[in-house]
Length: 117
Image (cartoon, rainbow, N blue to C red; front, side, top):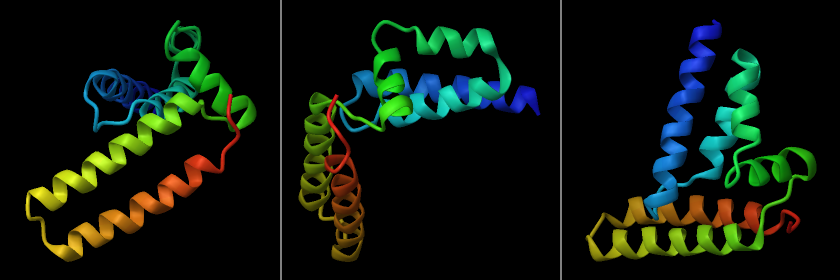
């Protein structure tokens, strides 16, 4: 089971790092999952992730206070707007855009009701 947790953590770190460069792919949710998986499998990997200069503070803020930085909130809102805009411009069926819109509004409400760091 430990190998499964460790592999899952590594895959989440890869997705999280990709999200740092691809505007529509989230970073922090993948890194939160990676922290969880590493916490179950590898102290060394967990320590590395938690002490990472760029990503560690966001993970710690969430784990300790349930907080999200204002910058992250605005980036997520921008990404959500981009997703909806691209979907509309790509002539995605209305029912799909509606599902996306409902989901993204729900996620946005959750994000914006979390405390700021």
